[in-house]
Image 1 (cartoon, rainbow, N blue to C red):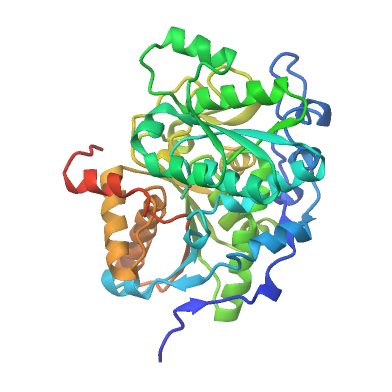
Image 2 (image 1 turned 60 degrees about the vertical axis):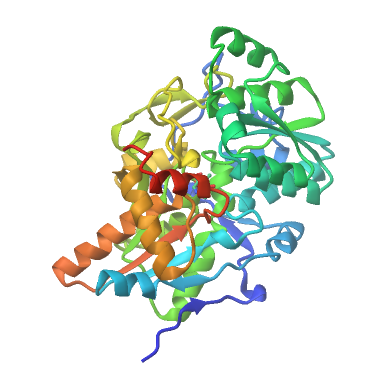
Length: 434
Ligand SMILES: *Cc1c(COP(=O)(O)O)cnc(C)c1O
């Protein structure tokens, strides 16, 4: 019997609500704290930085939250994304496991990041905000927010980590094409940027530094808000469209996952694919394994401490209860730039602490190797970040083979790697280390 390669949802069947897992957690995440007063954050603390609706969602315990029509209209440019049976990978591994991936790489910017960029820009626009600021590492988030801001007529300033600004010229070009103002960080434009440049004259920059700069500007200007690409609860909420679609698609396929896998930077694509299935484990006791695949060079979930820490280098963000390697941790310059972040989101951290999910560390030589196999058997060149999920999937599929078990594995292909070919070239040249 021929298997169905792609399970496609019709536009009219695209989910109308995001899922807020906090509603179903028996142990709620601990509150974020104000950096000076150390009191739990309130709406009044969040609204100078984020739109009112993003702030409301950040603190919400409501189970389902409606996706606005204007956001759904833009989602329809590329959503629903296909659920694909990785039959080529199954064959290459000679595994009895069934492997599916949710293909988020087909978004116009090539990754899942647009799922949250669009609502964040929309809520700012609705409130009469004119400007947004943000940071970007490798440039995926910056590209996503650039086009989202353009859709709603907002100006965007992106602080791009200096080393990426130099080494990844094409994402800078993408952001400029969409009309954003891109500034290498640390920059002379902000007070914190000037101080950082004085303290660390030769710094390559870091995400933590760029966040500090973007926040400084948003805090100073009343018609400006800050957009964030990962970790926070409202970002993870927006990403649940991934898993909500996947549930419907697996239902069409007559299947159900035993294992759900996502690569892990701050946790947004992992949350997106996993939370809608965790609803069944939290509410109905269904047994599913959830695996976050993080890089060995930045192993916050397996090696970090669960404690209150800042999201940025300078300590401008709230204190967040999370697994962290320390806000001054400087990860090695691995090629999966989107995974080089010192902490995990508060919700995911609590789920990890409670044993609802697990994590694995993967070194970048293994992950590139997995990415190349996937490219050759499925035809899609994955983002260096996504190759971590692919490696973890391969490990589980091989275990199924050893144990003779026919499990169903679902993973999130968070993005494609077509703008990251310089990283693949360095792998081929033998220039990457573990
Ligand atoms: C940003 C990014 C990631 C990591 O971020 P999460 O918030 O952990 O999902 C992973 N994959 C791709 C393609 C990215 O752009």
